[in-house]
Image (cartoon, rainbow, N blue to C red; front, top):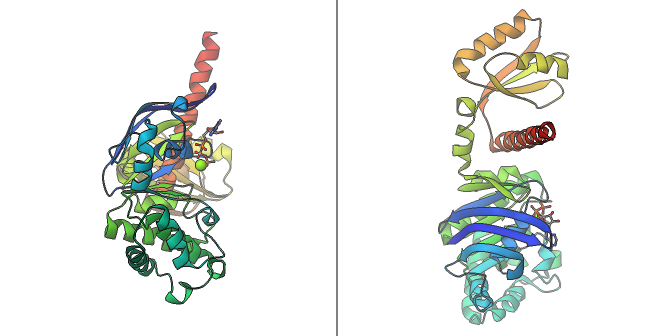
Length: 330
Ligand SMILES: Nc1ncnc2c1ncn2[C@@H]1O[C@H](COP(=O)(O)OP(=O)(O)OP(=O)(O)O)[C@@H](O)[C@H]1O
Ligand SMILES: [Mg+2]
């Protein structure tokens, strides 16, 4: 459905996407993750025909067509949908939802009756209350607006839907609602979805996740595979420790099988190590013998949030050790 091979994007001297390649099959949900400036929006802008060819190189196919050719743009645009970060960019607030649908479908030359039927079907899946269908959009709640914006993005039954930050600025409980609506839509309509997001919880509904940093694709896989690639398949021990400080952490780090310690709170750390089950009792013994007071302990599997943090940390460490090597060579 979407094929990206060796995509490079440059704006003048600024090289913002480096050799990115990935393939997405029909019906998959892909999460694009990465700290600000990683290149997420730029990649999606190439896929949605918003960046002129002179700025990019590589082989890119979206629904079997290349955005390289201007003559393909209108066909690609009718095959895809886009839900912007701000609803006000694709909704007319002074009109009601049904009139919004009419405005959008007329640009696709969709038949009015079919558009209305599709809208009703989408509104029902998205629980947009019937009594709001004929009221001005501005009177709808934030969550209803967001869902309407998704319905508009899907109204022409696109093969691929791009969503920019669908859960940003939405309160925690509503965030899960939006994610479950997206999953429901994906299952009912088999729409391929790209979710650009800072919200690491979104990985829960993604078939694959892409992790980007400084324009480079660090990982593209299922979150389960990524988590399992951690030492001991991602098993983590969480300790709460009295009077925890950096010196104490450095001391604990000396325990041989430890691969990483992440400070997760004022008095809490999470520990990844090789041969977890065998080494955990030994680690506890080591801490007790050295007068470290453990006030609680639990074990768990790493979440995607934790994986992401570890992966970015690892990349930064590698970058800084490379820099050191360069300095020494000079
Ligand atoms: N038209 C442009 N001209 C010059 N530089 C650009 C242009 N568009 C994007 N960039 C640069 O490319 C880099 C990647 O930007 P991009 O918007 O793709 O990041 P992002 O991962 O979407 O970040 P965010 O999470 O903040 O939205 C940034 O350094 C940005 O300044
Ligand atoms: Mg962005």
